[in-house]
View 1: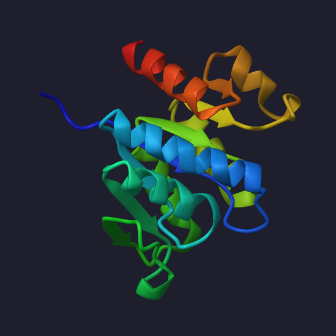
View 2: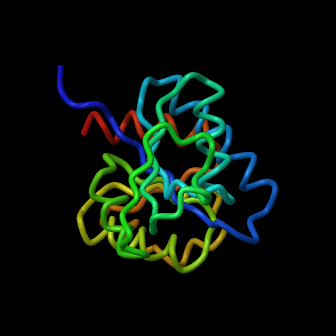
View 3: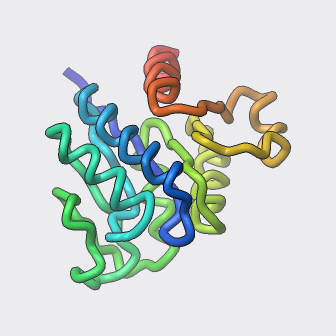
Length: 163
């Protein structure tokens, strides 16, 4: 038996739509039901918090890679918090520790994680993005993939893990 599959879910902490939050929570549940480990930025905000909540509600294991040493900012749904004290540099750990990166709507932090994943040839799934032009070059090289729903995302993860 090899190492556990780790799925990184990246996305915004602030100003995230309720639709994106609901999708991230559903995705967390589906990741847990597959027996995969969910990795997020570990904070008690936005996509990170709701994805972990979904995974925990489905009996999953959650890993949070936090930017600082502030335990009060940690999601209560994170099983294993890693306090890095590295600020946004912790995004490298998020990406390199994930077998597949799912990018949910977010801002510059999410974009940096996507860029790091693509630079590292990690598969990336943009879930719920409307703007196709932003990553179209990476899509044409088969590094970037798209899904609209958590269920589509899980199907795509399974396909990517088999390749």
